[in-house]
Length: 255
Image (tube, rainbow, N blue to C red):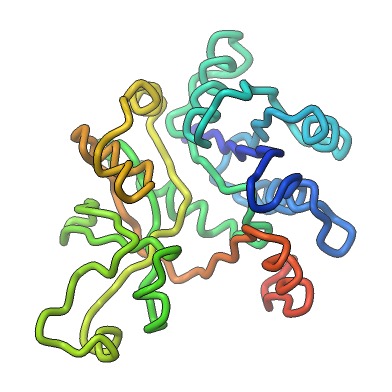
């Protein structure tokens, strides 16, 4: 299967400006993500998509493939769509069968996790794919920064929320984790190229505005999102404090 991996990398992060260029043991975050992606044998090609000349120069400097994209994009999905459109228009490569949007702030992403998303597309009916991991922490169940997802027995997403879902009626909140099953959404997406082009043309939806979750726009529009369960942990770096925490307490599977 011809699968294109795209790593959106924006310089002007509100909470952590210049985050992709932040160093971890002398190696930039974006380089660590890129090199982890290269370890995934299911990816045919890996491209960094950025709106920053500094990031472009840095990635090109270590030998990575990088594409300049518009500064007007409001999401990584839009940035991915521009890259796919440009590559297909310029006939630089055959049209991919699937596109994977890989977060640029997860320098320790496991290549196997990327493969889990890709394998969902062995089913020709899959339009969009993502991952979910079972929540084991009571604190995470109530944390609005931890996005929860519920899905059907056929692993199709029903809803994503910052609130605890499902609500455990007649069960004390401190017992929810023991008596219920909760899943955290892992923010890596795969798309069919034609579906990707349709997603970026959709208007902002009411549920998306309410929860500030882009994927709700897709569900409201009637697209199906396949949810694969994963056992792999992800470590996203959103702030300088997160980076300091990682530096002081490196993960065991750190490359």
